[in-house]
Image (cartoon, rainbow, N blue to C red; front, side, top):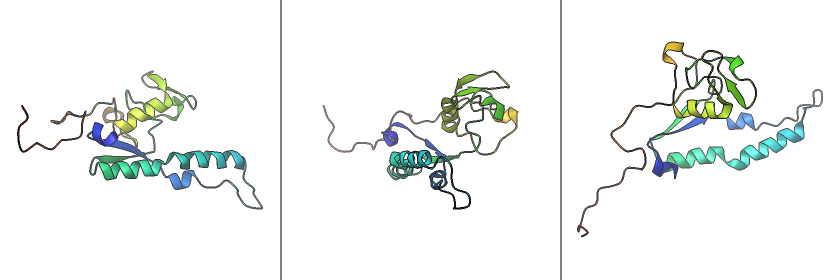
Length: 153
């Protein structure tokens, strides 16, 4: 569905291997919340994030982009300002610069869709806004081959 529906597909470049490391620790310094971390790891691995990205690349070669993960959840999708204090909680985002407010995950997804992430840029050029340049092709479908042969009446 992704390959048929979109011209460009962007994924946040997450290091899944590091995200799912064990929390056991050592004998001298045992880990904390090991059972909860094990459950989180199972959940992440069961979703198959890496497999989804790989299969999407196979079905739509050249149209899949990786957006660097740093600052995608701290960057305001309205003005582009990056501030740690804008992330009020795990779920709430309130920009300290322009006052834009929304769900933190929704804000991050707008930044990923706009290709914004990675390193902070100056404010005047950093605005994501979710706007991309128009292309000559429709973004609703995958390009279709032209039909050759007997015309249908």
